[in-house]
Length: 319
Image 1: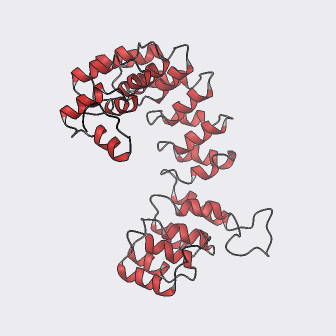
Image 2 (image 1 turned 90 degrees about the vertical axis):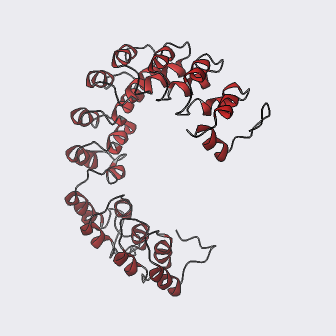
Image 3 (image 1 turned 120 degrees about the vertical axis):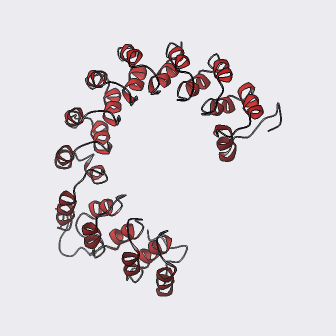
């Protein structure tokens, strides 16, 4: 990076400026740059020096100060200072920084702006008392942030699952701490969160196997004339097939699913072993075989077998 010239921001530049290996001279150039976006990026650098951080805490652009306020590596006293900024976006950003003290978070939990309270609700170091208070906030966005917070306790997540607002239900369904009993309630009562529940790591095999069995049945708007590929609730089975971790029991059921859409999702899953992939490499459907070829766990032998049987043409519309 040469001095005092416009730098086009692309992924490579962004990674370089945010890297802890950034040269100190290049870091100084970015800190002093007239380009706001460049200063925003360097403000997030985990190796930003104390001197540069103090300079940037006085930056004329709120967006730069907000980026700095989120930096977990700067002096915590600077974060406290930024939590008193004149601009709401900066205060909110400071509220999300886990280095901000609990006492300051407690003060800001009563801030007049919901933007700031949302930042507090997002902080993983917010105390149980703070989260309980914000779970009753008048703004649903604040309550959703509580539902998304990895530190929110199980009882509070269960309480929030009863919210009528679908975005909050979805946040509870996505939270990796949410217990199975709460997920079961969302599965039964929330149309919005139903499919999201299936991706939660706390879902038991018993629950998922029952969901697959139910999803094999004809839906109310279907009859016996519907083909195997779309019969039943294939979306449920596809979502289960895409889970990050799949047990052997689930794989053995899904690998023989009558819908090629489900088998295609399964064939893309990196939880599968070579035995599973070698079986799917011989699948009757070419899109399933294509997914096998693209799976990083597939052996060269299985890729060759799938390719020999034929793969979709590049202009195929089949997903």
